[in-house]
Image 1 (cartoon, rainbow, N blue to C red):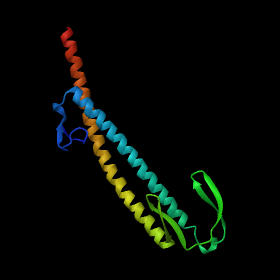
Image 2: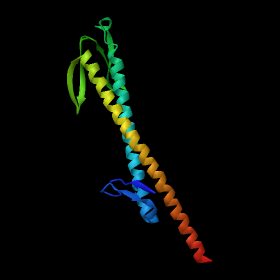
Image 3: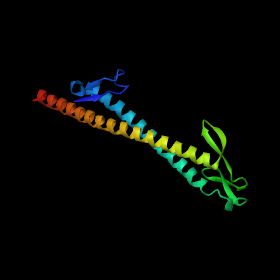
Image 4: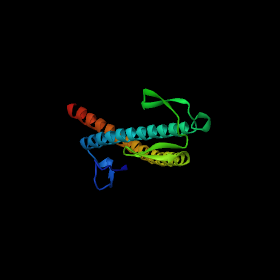
Length: 162
């Protein structure tokens, strides 16, 4: 069976016929794929976490209204540390646009920016999900072939002893 190689296994990106690989080669491919799947899974989780943060920001923007102007609020300094504050300007917010750069935006522009970020992140999550599914399929093929090679080696050793 042929699988698409990973950069670790074959820098050319060609398909590899795993049925032609030795146990040792399969073991190396297996380990490389396992590491790659772990990294992709971590990236997938980080993207999902980022989407959650942006959705939270989107939700919080709905609470900024003329009714709330001048009201006391809790301002987060970290995820577990807040300080008291007052909502004094209900027309503008400060938005992180990336790389620790912040821009003042009106509420409508901030909502639009956040919506675009969520859509972009969701596209990236979809792409990573697809890659991860393919890598997992390939990983199963390599695992089955590696296990078959191990069984062949055991059978060969048993045959030699008898």
